[in-house]
Length: 497
Image 1: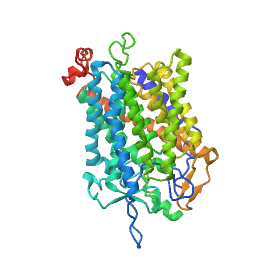
Image 2 (image 1 turned 180 degrees about the vertical axis):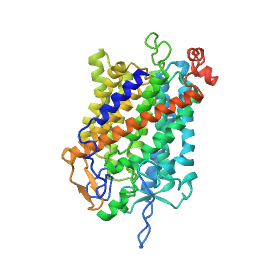
Image 3 (image 1 turned 90 degrees about the vertical axis):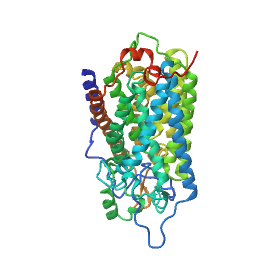
Image 4 (image 1 turned 45 degrees about the vertical axis):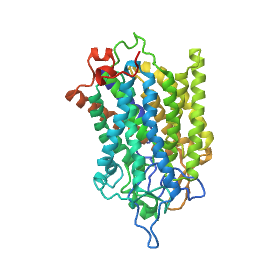
């Protein structure tokens, strides 16, 4: 308990001790961070945001473009591949063989369970009008969504079929909680995992998605007065001006903090640091990591919501940042450990993907490479240095990669989104041009995003774990843990001699 309280105090201090935190955040009224492929300059994006599309012009209602629609369908399938089988194989290869199936089972069932809940109430609470922190119940059970309804993109007059947008967002909502299981793998009850995920999805993921990604859509910004009115329905962090193209705060920091809290509250594995707990199949991990990388193009590039110039920028940045991070991790591991490892290289790739996620459609290629290099180095420290300092058993280094990498990426987005450093800047939908860029103010906005994600996820995760522990119990019995969760929980074995 003392470690948890000390950690919470440290995280709170780190994220909120930033000068001018409350007073200098850029207002998102007339100037809005979003991608606009119709502009002459690729613009910044707050990614994967939507709202009820403003009333159609008298002349003709906008019609979804078939190319955009086809790309979003493809992107959605790529993210589904990330969860099943990508994440399951990546995580599964890193645990001991007696727990392989438990990881595959958890990742698959979590994705499917939360996919159902997304359709029941998640989509409505995340992407309808409500308040700055949560949406409403207008689209409960997908009420009012038909093949003819549309969702806004980041270009005026450009829309998507709402079912496609809702499907794309479903994959984000379902894979994010699945990331968390790596923090306490090999020792948690299956029922406890599912109960926790429902609570965390409802009270952490959905509010964060609404705060960061919900807005009135580009067509609402016709004048300064209209922009002020549109800001009334925007999410808390969106209105603060925080940039998050594809999920640095909503996905990675959010999940990383939850995994950290879970690792502390559930405790280390039996025999941790006394027995060998080496990955049982780095081949599986490499295959899973490669599937994650390919799927991540759907995750990042799909967040442009259009098959245009910003999508091309996000694609290239996702590619080169990952390459840079892999090289950085491999080199620093060879220097400090004497030998570069396969596990290190694939971990570096994932670190690069995490770091570039919030920035992929906002920064230039050189900015992406620098972010990737820094991501590989900092996340290496997160896994090998910070983890030991905190003294917790984060089994698969979720916090060290997703938490640390997400924080780094979110903050660096504020630096490299600057047009002077090759970034896109912030697009002003009232002026229909890129606005003057204030790096200091943007960094404050980014810090708001980081701090909110850390505190929100930390508080929700702690309460959710406590409730589940009181009702179900978090941890399996010692005998079950020693036998392995494959047999003790699921009655199956991944391998047969």
